[in-house]
Image (cartoon, rainbow, N blue to C red):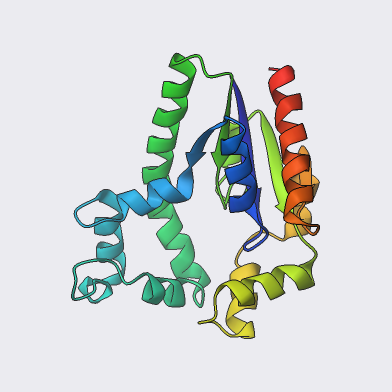
Length: 200
């Protein structure tokens, strides 16, 4: 079974590419979606966050205050590393179960959608790595346009918290330039997927 690791810089359009692949018939294993599910009340990541940040990280409604968590970890590298060390193994265990299930079901190719694919070392789970890329100025502009709650300094901190996009592109088997139109990106991804399936 071919496992494509899909990643990219924040706001580069990875979710758009993942959706195109899903529409092509790809089986998507979405690490962010798994993390979100495991962050619900009484789930493993919820408890890990409360242990790390304290009960004040829980809102009056009983859910995690994600904005406050982001504010803390993107201003404190050591804290972010500590959080990742606790959370990543929890997510990875579920990801590996999903990959095993796909293999047992005879799925020819799976897309492993992970923002921190290289940073977390999860590229070791893949047979190919695809990176969605944008020029730095456009990446910053799209992030600011997407999230109106952060200023430019906060946006740059989010970008700088990840491995440099140029390094991700150097490590990737395939780089998808998402600086064109949505239709251009869609056609590029559809062609890549057909090629991938043809060689599976």
